[in-house]
Amino acid sequence: MPTLFLLSFIVFALVRVIPGDAVGVLLEKNQDPKLAAELRQHFGLDQPLLVQYGRWLGGILSGSFGRSMLSGVPVADLLAERFPRSLWLMGGGVAVALLLAIPIGLIAAARPNGWPDLLASGFVTLLMSVPTFWLGILYILLFAVALRWLPATGYAEPFEAPLKFLSHMWLPWLTLGGTLAALTARILRASLIEALNQDYTRTAAAKGLAERVILLRHAFRNAAIPMVTIVGLEMGYLIGGAVVTERVFAFPGMGQFLIDAIFARDYPVIQAGILVFATAFVVMNLITDIVIAVIDPRIRLG
Image (cartoon, rainbow, N blue to C red; front, side, top):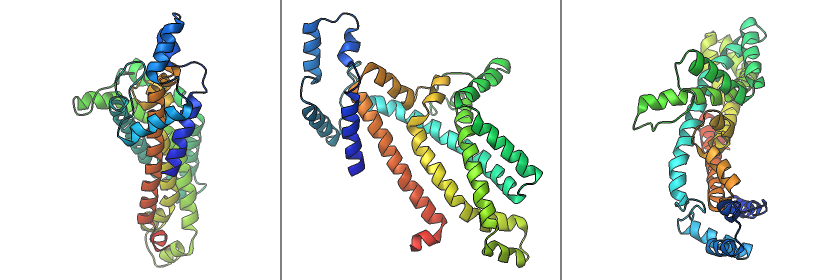
């Protein structure tokens, strides 16, 4: 809570340092001084910064994020529409990343420096080297333009049109999951190689256990701790940080929504959006700590 409180004040102050305000955006070139003054008074922008912050914080504590300065729609309604979409994008991207990273990491660690490891490491290095926007454009050119299997842009609600939803989400999921998969696979490989050189895995091998059993049952559980940490942190970032992916596929998520609000100087939307991102990041860190404690009994004992 102290972190969120401090962050809320910093964001509130910084967005007002940006040149211009929502009144200037609303009036555009027709800058009538009298009308501009009336609008600033209507939005409370003529009040001291601390007074504005106190009113905004009081609204949040009472369950209100205020209204958008541009559309007049309650900010809570706008967030309720956009935030679930970003959760779908983040969840699918992480699922794709894990489906790619775990097999690659296991194959690479099973035979270090062998040809499977070299192929897996080369593939991971390639994924890490390719910019996200370029990977997304390649997917569009291949699957949407050349093969015409999937749409390049658009969105459908999952519970209204499930098949259409999946068709629109595959390319953003692959784009978002590819970069995360590369980092996760590299960390998992290094952790597995370290775990396979520990005494407990050597003891298991001396008992005659199969290599697959040692790798999956003994080494993987300990090696998964750094992987879970990285994935948990990345999930917090991806909720609001997938702006490039959303831009490439014209995805109506939180990242693009917040960028538009920043350009429009829509203060209530900016403040509420960043506060939601920060809260999601804190929650994801908490969930990550809980999952690590479940995986590793030593942490629970500590």
